Amino acid sequence: MLAIRGDRLRERREARRLSQGQLAAFARVGQSYISMIETGKRENVGSRVLTALARVLNTNIDYLAGSTDDPRPASEARIDLSPSKRHAIELIMIMDEAMVRNAERYLQYLLEP
Image (cartoon, rainbow, N blue to C red; front, side, top):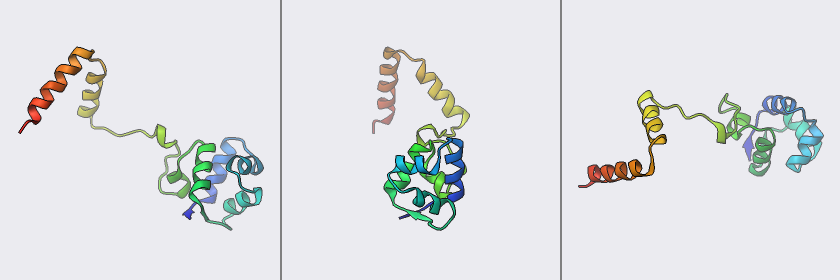
């Protein structure tokens, strides 16, 4: 069982313009179950239900649990990179196949004992 914040569940449900009944149907639970979570009468839910709720509400489990304030789905979470790492990735993205092969060979050379 995992903890879930009812206020966050309600906020995301309302943002998606879903009724408690609609959300319950998507998550395959009863409407009263959703109501109990939102009102704080039930704080722990199974991982299957929590995963389904996060998916339907286009958010992530950590947001519903209160571990993060970022409501974006995990697939959209932004990775913070230093400017030099971001620049390196940008350079790699514009390389053609021959350049990539040469870079791989060079890195292998550098990593040899």
